[in-house]
Image (tube, rainbow, N blue to C red; front, side):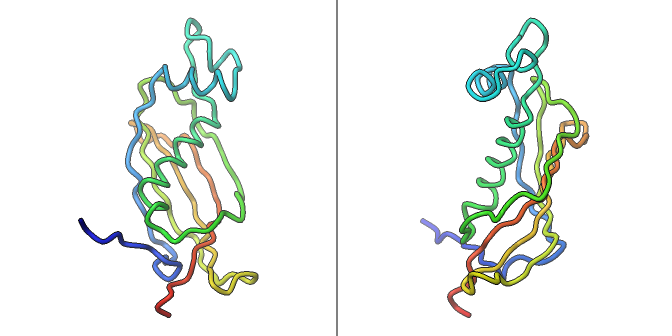
Length: 146
């Protein structure tokens, strides 16, 4: 069994791009999410041709982000989301690919054991059409070795 690599604040550099992998969106996923969290007709009426809720798309981004990057990072919390844009509809059969680009890094003013990483995340569909863009912050622990 290998040793898990942990990313600390010092591992993040402005301009770094992290690939997040892909997610295939199904009609069942769209309807199940919407039935519980966003039951608008556009998201649950399969006879009308469903479109994924923007919140569902944001959840897909978060899942990819956690699996590909955050789960191996000494993350604390997120101080917030600066902006979120839903850029194009997501329909059943779409395959969404994600990436995150580091926009800025700075020591935390309130937590000397942490730094703040400013990031821009994006999901694109199988035709490279952007469907989600989110600009957000992550509070990441500093390396204990420093």
